[in-house]
Amino acid sequence: MQQILGAYVERNGGQESLLVRFSTHAIPRPLRWQNSDLLADFLAEYWATLLPAYAVPPERQDEITGAIGHVANELLENLVKFNYRPERNAISLELSMHAHVLRFYATNAIDPQAIERFQGWIRQLLGEPSSELYEERTRHDQPGSGLLSLLNDHAARLAWKFERDPNDPQLVLVTTMVEVEMK
Amino acid sequence: MLEIEGEEYRVTYDPDAATLAFEGTLRLQGMDAYAPIIELLDQAVEAAHAVTTLDVRGLEFLNSSGINILFRFVIKTRDRGVSRLVVRGTTGVFWQTRSLRNMQRLMPGLELELA
Image (cartoon, rainbow over all chains, first blue to last red):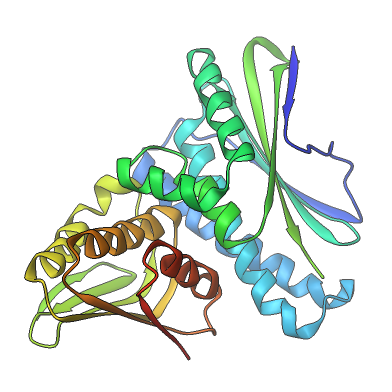
């Protein structure tokens, strides 16, 4: 089983990459939340130091660092919130640098009961003008506003891959890919 | 002056000046955690000031749940149809430029002051 939604690009490490993988089941969520904040800040600062070496124009570096912090924060919030059977599956976030884009890959296990609904929501997200959808979601307080704020506020591109966990075939993994323009 | 303060943030509502001000970093966990702030914003909507000012110049980081509550505040103000809304932001803070312009798409009469 493998399903792709959106213009998904397989991981290839790019020019360089950083992968963080961690388990979330042992510690209650409030503390986990704080640690996710720390990790998002760290990732933004880590990549900020590399941007000059990749010839990112100086006037864009602050903006891109801000985007990295926000995208990483949203992805980490979702990973922690939605990872299914966390005692069996560690979540991961990978960032890789490519010629013109920085790619994020956020992977968690998903509740099999939730797949269909989530995919319906993704199709809606990929198919409709996001500002109208945003208002709709804002009014009714439905989940997914984080992904919409990525689309709307950061001009980031999103795609998803669903696949069986090769190490634990009963689990389905979903990887959210986000691309942020560098130049 | 009404005030909500957390470790990393401060939100104030001054009814006399009809001004809401946000400072710091706001990344609370989900909409429930934002309930006290939503209540404060609702009070400002209910007060039906002639002009309401939302000042976010000091708000350096905001997660999507936070953006969501600000958008809901704008929609409620728009739908009530009484107040003009002035939003003060800064181009020096990453999330503000695009998110605040998106607010204007929700409420075309919103007066955005980006310095």
